[in-house]
Length: 565
Image (tube, rainbow, N blue to C red):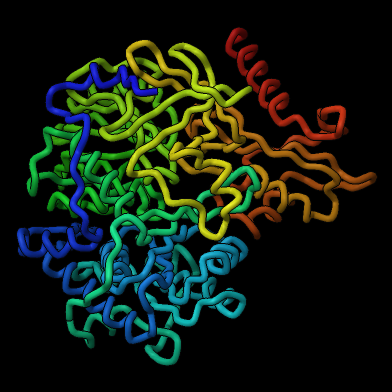
């Protein structure tokens, strides 16, 4: 277990071990404001905000949270797309001594209620157009206060005047909220409050910075407890890996959402730690992204395969100058080799595949960007201070190179455990090892490969989707007798969600009806794209539905179609 063959593959520029400063995550924003006071921290849809402005706003927000009664260790939810407010909110919560609960803005009332109830969040920062949704669940959760912001608040003139009309046309929602009672306006908070530094007792090893919700084999999302040490360690590893990046000089394209742990570490924390400029986009649109790259000249572009594929498939990509891009690490799903090659040709930069999971803050492996071998089909090698091994699925013993088993990782970025779930924590954390649930192998040189997933997670468009959660919604439909959900291959999204349904006798339901029903309870990316009605589902002798055999059927169909094509 002491052998780490991958270290012999490291270029001389990447150290095998790093030293980590024992200080809170938010101290890096304090330092950035001191060292890069007038430097642009955030560019958002035409508006520039300096590090000093972000720092002062975060302190004002922190003081207001204290005024609302937030104490050390209390949870505060942030339900926002990428923008200045998501940066201010994140660091403001940490300055106040709170724990950030990142919440997907696409969540339905049902999903939001579950997460708020589970986390015990007392305050939520959200968008005006999401206010009605949050209000409806407020009484069923521990939320005491809703702080509201609007996209227009950080748009330059005249966009800030025009945007509300565009928003109303697109969403049909126009919300007017008064700054009173348990409803608060971020704009008023940042006008009225003072930027006073706050003191908190601090434990680098144990204090939580973030509750990052992820799903699991039960289908119910779990709060991954990430400490200040976990996050600082992973962002520091990111810096060591992208060793050609110059402190205070790079521009990072922030397309990956901060409510996803990869965007939070590889864009938000990494940028603030290094004093980089973040160019933030609230959602992915290929043309907007291409225009932004040409105009803002980002040098670092963390992303997911669907993002790179979306750009490459844009009909006018050759009209845009993308040559500023130097380095991209792709995560969330497997990176097709042809996508890597095409994107590198178009930009002149380097694009490599990485691997991680919420439970490891998230990154554990990546291929080398500039030096060292890049191996086709491999997730790369473990990052500095990260150990990895393959364990037998039969007896749990470590396996030699070339043999297939469960991938486990160990390192300072590995979570403290699952929030209020000691039994599930014990299932995945054993003797310091985090068992990933992914099945793979390591070659003789120390490169790792994923061959399958032990869990039944569907990864569509970079999102983790948990079949059990969707199945539970389908089972609530009065005409459904049985349902099983699986991820089937999709050339664009990586996988897509398909539901196999057995209806009750004499019941008649259309795909369109099931689609409308599902959308009431599930975020759009979780809703099945395909439905197949069957008389029966394949099962084991004890009645367990065989999801894997359905996936195999789909693969065989695709292979047959490819041969015919």
